[in-house]
Image 1: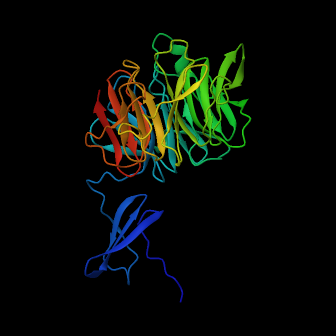
Image 2: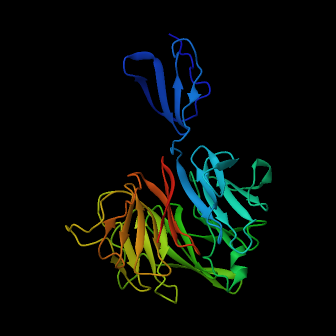
Image 3: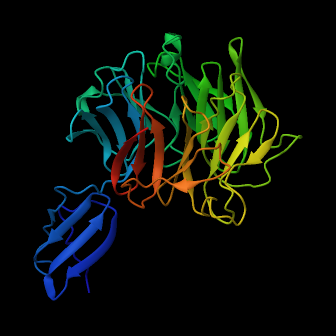
Length: 365
């Protein structure tokens, strides 16, 4: 028997096929593009979209305009990059497997988007497919981290600094991706860099798939690397994917961070480093206010209320009001879907979460 494709017009990466009950002539498909229907699957390969009104795209990472909360970029698995300019309508502005996006907070018309190992840069805010200029990098992970320093109007020059990780290397740009300094830092790891955050313009942290954490400081024109997961005063006792790193805003020296672990096998998915030693911040063992043993993908502390920490897990968002001593679900209408990115808008006090399969959500703080 020779197989015949009946998939015309349906999106790629099929996850499920199901017939309507009692109707073998109605075949539904769930895929990375949402929901599609074929009303004659034995004789026709034509599917039609049934996505109007659905929030079903697999959003990965997003970027926010610093002062206008209606303007966002969002990377979508297998659906490129989408842009919102205010209101409920999003525009598809780039193709591929969309990943990290960055908006220059000092000049928001400068934007960066990642897809399939390529960094795309635009100077018109990313208005459409013709906006982008490409820089190709080694594509070693599905989506590779791209970050810039946090919003800081007192130091506008920091907004032009961008770091991108490919494998175990970090590439820096001082002109927001117009040019790149190849392999500015090489991290000694058997894994690859997965989590990365700038805490200020002269310091960033990286976490690897093998469980190492490094601090990287600018010294003159070079960057110096220091491993910290093995801190003698209190090392990390777990090994696993470092999925994200959050800034501890209470520490003015910017030596303290939070990390989130992916994987499973231990409920202690959030840890704090105080510049000297590590301490678990996942709630009390065996209690009712601890985190679940599921993947934790994103972590952020509130710059204005640093005791409040939020994590995005494979089951929604969780909140701690006491720096990780206790946790509770923060549902507020959020579906129990994996949360891949979590950010607080720098000027409008909105906590935003990108969900894998249910779109982008926000809640005022």
